[in-house]
Image (cartoon, rainbow, N blue to C red; front, side, top):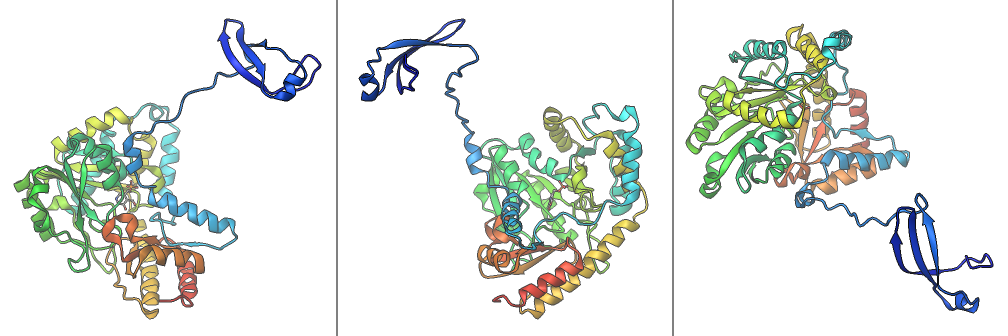
Length: 440
Ligand SMILES: Cc1ncc(COP(=O)(O)O)c(C=O)c1O
């Protein structure tokens, strides 16, 4: 304002801070002000009336530029856009069971949450009772003997173990062998430990099983970790114990730590029983297995899982985790004990539901002219298409159906899309109906 109360445009000539505020030397900025004969003057802004302009700009680490936008987050955004436009979207994209966590497990959590002894920091490695329940489950299910004190570690889901193990074993520039297509955590975990991923292609020709002899010698020189994942996300392929034997020999020869990621072992059909990597002789010497209650008991939101196997490898992972998290809420561990040691009918019932959906979807897709084999395990159907991005975009745009483009799981996922069987059969039937009018 000038002395007559008119608003002026000012040019700052400098300022000085004092304990009482800031003094700003000002000049009028344009001729209009000069016309009003405004002479330079000083204004004082008391503290609280001004903010010093911050020079702060977020300087993200370079690795942030390499992080892909997490695939499912991006698909969620696209889906949200369609829903905002009023489309009745059928989401066959994300691998999150629509079925509820069985009642007896929820009740166990509610009961355990009442007790004050469960309200404190949990133990880093997991409660001894939880680790014993995991060891008992592995013995009953796979015939694998584990020492709960040293060979079992509680995880906040298998993702926790997958994304942190690299920090214990990978130095900058080291190679991590990961399936492509593969679960995105193998790539991001490697990035956080400044390693390099060597993709092991999973193709129809190799039955979606990596060909270990194709891995270049140069890569093997500094390869520290190898991820394998059967039953496989996203291809739904399964592995034999013969493949696991090959992996054990290969890891022993090349001094590579094996991480078998096995969260889908219980989601299986037509009587198929998926093996554990640890069933194979020598596996405990070279590797660990990540498992979780997420898919088996519809507990994705609870964040509970386990790493089991070689004690030294687990000790490395445990040391990292001790420094980044504070364990799993004890009440959740109590509920997980109930899940692992209680009746298993709920698992069989869930598989029967997925199997019916699988049959409907696979039959429907084949009738539409696609060539889709029925998976033996996982709740995914992996379908060949020409261009995965174009196909998924077309499905969302023209039919309001979300499927996951194979490229989101790595370069070798091109040419495929993934359907998840995590929606009621009525929605799958509806989706097939909508697809009938689409170009094949
Ligand atoms: C192959 C694979 N591994 C690990 C995970 C992580 O699961 P969670 O952390 O819930 O156990 C997923 C989740 O979709 C997965 O598909």
